[in-house]
Image (cartoon, each protein chain N blue to C red):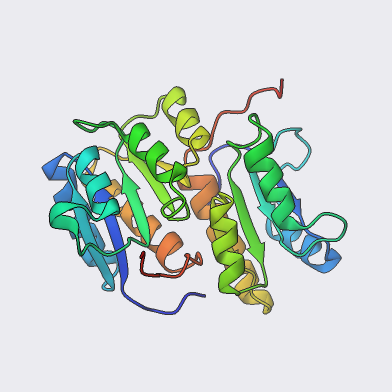
Length: 149
Length: 126
């Protein structure tokens, strides 16, 4: 089992309501989480590459990625992460409203670590976040945090 | 929680004890269909190492790379965790020695991967 240390999450989500629901659900589910938010694909890449205002951004332990994003879509962000040698080992969970087979298939093709659908109902939203917390943060072994030179 | 569909798993494991424990823990799951919905892969295997199996699934076979592959191993070595994620393992789980902890882990695989996660659709392998 992984030792209880603060885990850094990057949530890539443009919908302010979903950001807030996710933040609140993590607050309830797991005290040892730092949740960072990027509101579009370009911002997510800047965060991960530590560009501009993200020069001191931490390397996330886990990425939660929406698919429908402005500027750069989620599949494109996913392809960027999984083709970058410094980033590809960061577990990337697709969290999308879409349950279209094509979106699911394409995400796994691009090496998403798993695909979860965002439920519409508030209670179900909490359940999904709790599931992510229980499985990814408390059960799975994650790659060790290391500073990227 | 029970899975919402009859899922197919491929367990790659050389220890008969662990195979039996996993089978018993997954009692309800049908293990006969050709294309697995999920692969549980041990790292230390005879003949072909688990890392090589993983690399073949994720790098050599376009039609296999979409199958979520979960590493289930006793190794806690950082190098194994890192390498597995680098080879695009979908996740890495440490196999506990105690029976109760092992059963709890299998239950959490069932609750997460077979209940919450959307898996790629079953299609005949071309």
